[in-house]
Image (cartoon, rainbow, N blue to C red):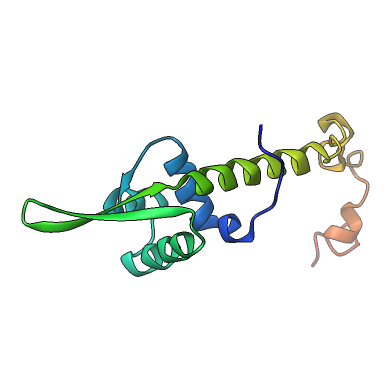
Length: 129
């Protein structure tokens, strides 16, 4: 089990999604990641560069069908950092107190009919004429 550790590099929504995808596989192709997180090529490139600079992923380029393809995969350090970040998020989520039951919610218990209607409809019984 990883020691919970918040990681600001991983935590950005796009990078968190990338890491989630990479945690389930050895490698993912650039286009697959781009489509999965619904960002432009340039935005994905920036996210991948930040993860690579942190030592969390490795990028591999390979020619396929006459085109250069980029593949991303976790490094061992990246996999550990992601596991620690997820553990910290789970720890934080465990601190949240349960919400009051739905039946206690004010939205579920409106005032009895007639109360508050004057304020909503401008007072008098003439329908606002």
